[in-house]
Length: 277
Ligand SMILES: NC(=O)c1ccc[n+]([C@@H]2O[C@H](COP(=O)([O-])OP(=O)(O)OC[C@H]3O[C@@H](n4cnc5c(N)ncnc54)[C@H](OP(=O)(O)O)[C@@H]3O)[C@@H](O)[C@H]2O)c1
Image 1: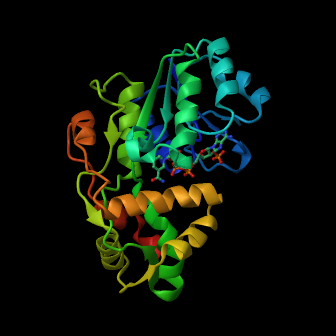
Image 2: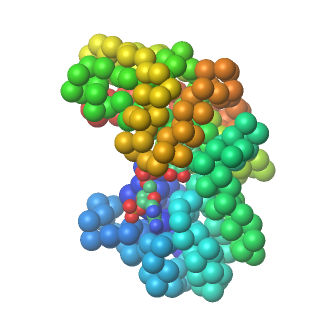
């Protein structure tokens, strides 16, 4: 029952791969450019790019389960997965699809569209729906390293960021049939942490004080456009404004699926301290 991890060098994908290996599951890893992928020795690595469907039949040959990111090319992937006899697809989607206020939000709609493709495919599929990845804090790493500053909209806005290891653990629970029902419920960390407190914890882990500069919505929009489209940037602004109004919850999903509390944000800062030092 080989499991293909598509995007095995992504933050969540790599954790999925490592956790499946630790369980002794037969795995295959893929990347768009496998020749540059630094993956564990002994793991078969293939090329797979959802936007280049010709890469998919060979990558999926003999595969029964797949972990995949919600990226463009999902329709071609679904066709190829059915043709290859794949029995279960676990997709990293987004908790924003479950938030009524995020209707029309570009990020939520993108993930909703990917979910619709899989729902219509006839494949057995399970979405994993984290709301806020702790890795979002990496966006502050450059200015913290070079200027000791983190610039943000609404420093008091609180979210419950989830460690990539816990997102992966939920995906692995789904892939291995260990998950209780509810694995697709809104997935968050266990504690609400304001952005200001997140930066304090980063500073403590990195051993340096960090100053916060508050941004206006217009300035935040421009900053986020450095990482994505204007529509995606506007979506992130909308999420932060909602969080500032108390609209970013902490749920019990991770604890229920994993049978333990989710990792605290301080664990994430300890794991990533070097990136901010
Ligand atoms: N940021 C948030 O708060 C948040 C909240 C909810 C959900 N999410 C979801 O989580 C994702 C980020 O997860 P992450 O941090 O693990 O991402 P990441 O480290 O940036 O990795 C993304 C992975 O996607 C793979 N990929 C991209 N396009 C592909 C394609 N056309 N075909 C095959 N593979 C492709 C990449 O493969 P290569 O290695 O080959 O480049 C890479 O491994 C977001 O994109 C979003 O869907 C994020």
